[in-house]
Image 1 (cartoon, rainbow, N blue to C red):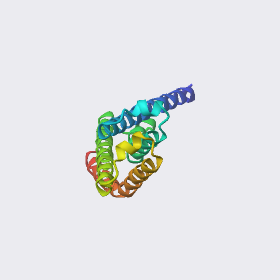
Image 2: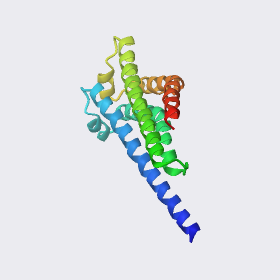
Image 3: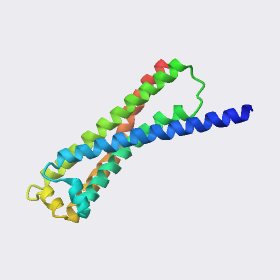
Image 4: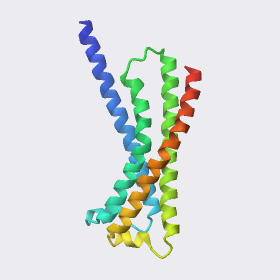
Length: 176
């Protein structure tokens, strides 16, 4: 009977962890898509995607990948204490979850800033190229450059960003 109760508890933790990961992932993706929508005010992205504009779709995909590269580890930090019995009292578990939430929000803010800065940087270093107009025309070459720049900047910055997240984790350890 005790084994069945443990299996039930483990399944419940797994389900709650999956739901938590889905909610936080969806929040990050929604934020990234909203940011891109604001950065590309001259384009109705979903209208273009419905028309089969692969250039706009590729850029959207790169924004989503960029968001998840920074946010994915933060989501894992939130899900881990939910799915694993860490033997912490409830108050310490709440403190742990609050700090992981702070890490998630820091990651989300970092991703937003990086995406914004990267798109603006590409725009500035290509003054004779109207990126939005080219995307709207379906120019895959422009979409590839913007997409690669986004993903590569996030990958390069993610190592440095881990230092920020580690700092927050260090502060967290003072409370646990």
